[in-house]
Image (cartoon, rainbow, N blue to C red; front, side, top):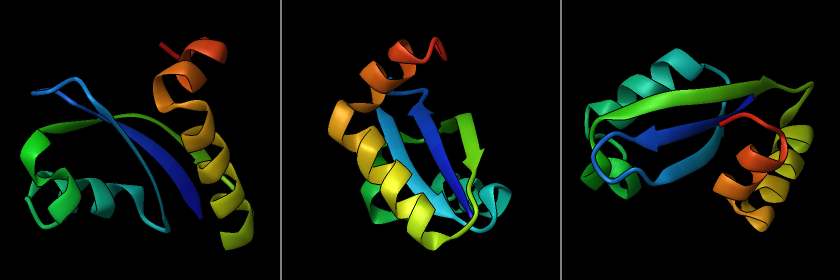
Length: 79
C-alpha cells in the first residue's frame, strides 16, 4: 500500500490519498475519472510513502490530513 500526495498544476492545491498502484491512480486523477480532483487537472505526484498494510496507510493519510498537507510537507522538508 502507498499513501501519496499530489499537487494540482492548475490550482496549486494538494490532494492526499492511498492506493496499491500509484502510477495507475495518478493516471485516473489526470484522466478526470476521479470526481474530487477533476477540476484541478493536471496533477503531479509530489511524494509517495510505502506502508505495510491498509491500516498503516489509513493512519498515515489521516495524520497528514489532520496536520494539513502543505504543513506536513513543510514540517518534513519535502517542499
